[in-house]
Length: 344
Image (cartoon, rainbow, N blue to C red):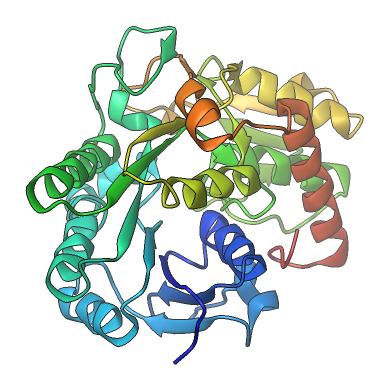
């Protein structure tokens, strides 16, 4: 029997999962990553962790596969980072979003309750649970008003975390993470869409990757975007996983907002990314109504005061730091012809 603490991470192949796996390995954990099996599965984000973590194939819509993993490892900690996590896709796939993003966490908590009640559980919640709330700054006490299928699914899971915490005295908590990005971010997200477009234009790529509409990301030197006035609080994912871990080390479970308390628009994102590569964003960005959401969350910043005082956590990377890092990584990736990052 190993003396190492065991942690299970769902969604280990994603941006957050890969950074969290690295962090836990550094802390001496036995790390078990859960992933869905796919015939085209290329987990580039964790390729450098081959042989360092265990991989189990499971699915959040299959309770038996979850129960099998919990019973096999009886981990000290479970981090649920898996979800249908693209808000735009949730409009076209609301049922799938509900099955995975809303009910998936409940299946995990139920497996823990029945098979490993001492296991501590972290749920990845999101700023989207606040929806269109009219507040300049959001904290843990702000009214919950999800206004899209993804946010509503995350809100259900968030409320069920509190339900299991109260009803079964389960150590379960939610990290209410505002937008957080990195070079490992999927191209489905606007930050990577912009930084990859910059790289393709800067390097003269003739065969750019596809955008969310299934068309070339860059056409005639231009990238198609939605609402440029949309505002977000963006942070660095590698820093945010430190807060996730810290939440499960507290004496009592509690929910925490993890954010930067800053706000930037998509226009700011475009200007910062293109100018870093010596380009004028106005020459390369066009708006397209196809990329507008039916509803949009309100502009707001996240107040991370509770995390700062109780977890001793604060963001370090600035918005410019983050976007410059992503642009540099995508330019390097395009030049090397690597489709995805390995250990950025």
